[in-house]
Image (tube, rainbow, N blue to C red; front, side, top):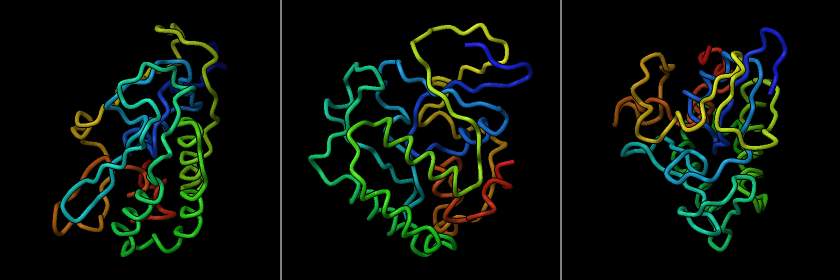
Length: 210
């Protein structure tokens, strides 16, 4: 893929309400290119995110129709809607953030998103990503790969596919610091989902990320 002169592109996998390291990386690029033709990788942020809870971080995981061990092309990965996972995730979010400064401000709109049915994981991730970007005021152009390529030679493209792995990304020392809901109980939890920053800092989120 060719990019315009001096236009920096970030290539990365589709993620469920990405974490702050994702966003810190994104704001240093001009264009976002999401990988669509890779094979699904288990134990990744593709179908999971982490939020703050009273006893530490809480995992929100989207159940998949063929389970986590499938080797399906990402664009074809289907969500398992047999269980009411959206209702469960929303209940967990309400419980965790109802006392946060900005939750009430976004509650109705985000609650409506969690009531919409989705068949494919990438469609769900895209809807979540677009909602979060609108809330924080981020307008990076988004495109998708048209085929899979293992290696990219474009010097203006950063290949960050599978760079952000759960459990290995909290060592970043330049991540934003802010007051979290349960910080007095469990300490500051770095690099959670963008939702945590949104509920705690609202319209100030993008400024803090920069």
